[in-house]
Image (tube, rainbow, N blue to C red; front, side, top):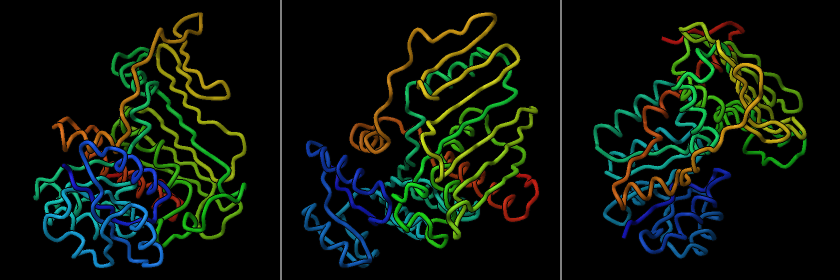
Length: 324
């Protein structure tokens, strides 16, 4: 039986991860919770019927857990994840991995050195339409990509339903781009590879502390342009993705949530798309109990941090930022 420890309760997806892991009582069990805030931690531990810790080293000690689900503040990720790896615990983490490439490389070194399994939560990569898109681009369905744009936005700030934690630059490292914008960023990395440069425009439409309206333009070595758009102040704005190539164009999402493409005269829809994969947390648990592969790797996590750090450096400098 796989023993799982929950490292932090800060992230909005914490309860979802706890519920998914806790529902798999045939092959895993939640045995420990670490949360520095005793008022919060004690209540959750009582609900989950697991052992509660305020000391992280004690939480990791011994054989009480085999793996950790990291839902702590993003600012704590380097310390929390590196210590877990050094303790020999397998690691599942919410995105982003860290605020800086330097910290991301430190985390990767610890994961690789200690031989632990690692998974970052990149759920959009497992959706059927994106699996189809990945193969379509590999097959050059629309030729060579010249332009790719993804918008992922909601009204979390303007609708006043996001918690204050999302507007804290110390714990989050940023606002809309760092959180919601991570999905377009890791998808663009998956589709197009590492960008050559990033240029960003972030604004504060309703929130003073962090960006709530943001766009980053990515330049690729091949000459293609990528655009990652996000917002916390967008009403009735479904996700949209467009990919333009030398032979045609693909659109996904939009008001009708359709996947269509045009090569020649007629717009078409795929005859079918792949089945969606399991959720990232279930993929992680399956890898530990069944030995299956994890598609969302430490290298993918580092790549997201590198691109995101470049986006923020461009915003702060007001200039294009070149990646190494």
